[in-house]
Image (cartoon, rainbow, N blue to C red; front, side):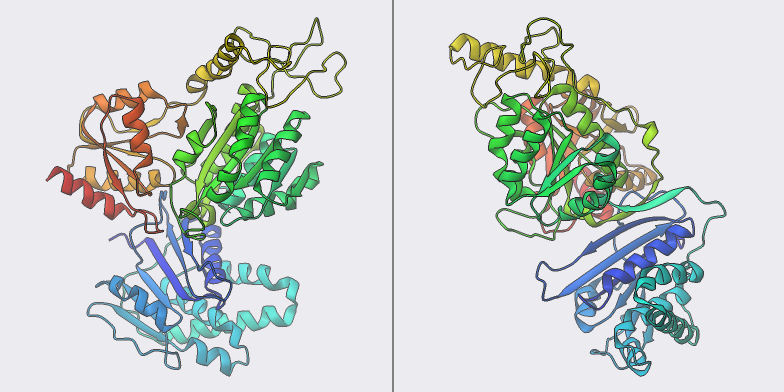
Length: 571
């Protein structure tokens, strides 16, 4: 039990300030120099419902949201009922009482603290400040930095006026006073580190937007869709500052079409969507590949199929991302592990799109989209930025010239001598339509063979561990962080295990998979989908035959789940 690796879960009715309470805790911990990793879930319906925000804070690096909470703060009876089974001996339980809507039974070994959140807020004439009373109590009980909390509360409400700021700070102080009157019996207490890093707290969605701006984004078109909309919101706030353009299209087909059009005009262009939107973009992916026009599409995966679970987590769009188009349609597919990756791999997505003149899909997911983490403050000058190959203006211009690397020079519309035809029809080197068998074979070979260099252009997949192992765990996307922590625990218990974390999923780095597989007696692929989609591609493209471990309940893995599965497999 690491008392300085603390997980606090705040839960209750959407609209009671659950999410803002979690945000305040997260920001205060980060300001104090702690590492943070958050997870939140909320209903898809506007009318409200159960909402939960979990903050993990530690002086040590964090890779995932953890197993379960150490502290539960329940705003109502539903939150208590849904989390009661996780109130294990040693956990702390802060709840609304007396005066709340429930009377909990405190399980044996659980440290219970009754804080009259609703009653106190009403008595203060500020019923909406219930969450501030709770926040004050949590601050007092678990040493969440008081001054940092006061600063973030003030910053949040300053625009609403002095009266609102003072009302919330008074409720916060009252919560601390109520908690100070209780006898603390649990061991949980945060200790801020002596030194602080230069960090910023960002969500995965905002980090994608930042990465796009660093890469030189000129044009963004999107149709709002959960859980990707916040990318568009972030870009809308910042892209105009650098002279870029953002358009809200009428649907996902239009947004993908506009992105391809803007890229044809010489601009770096991107859209962001989720699975249902990506399904509609299939034809324009084909247009991008056929016309060899760069584009970046971010897919923030959610539970499916159909409308599915709009606000929940899943990693189930890999089939669609790799093969979601008619005909033989190539593309590059990347996936991000964490918020830091959301910045750096978005830049890499643009670099690859520009160099290889093709669609690049960047896969995130619903958990990472809303999660916030502390990341090193990014220095835009430290990123390598790649631009497309340009025609030098000499000789006859052939837009689709078959070159040594199969990548043809591009000319923006209006370039003297650079006129050419660009359609979705098969064409010859000049761009003129040509439907002959020989030409189609040659041009398809050109379009696919230029992608042969992608694997060498992308950093090799990380191997977590040395030498031989009884079991190798392959994970992708945000499941990588969970696997990292699980593997560390297993090694500490003497289990022979190692990890493999690919972030370039297509074209698949086959030799890297084969080399890792050769060092392990057995392989397991952990992924959040029903069909074991990455495991399917591994079996199809390599000689490896990994076992699948899949879940699809709308929540991510926990390290404990992977630890238990490994022990079961090796028993």
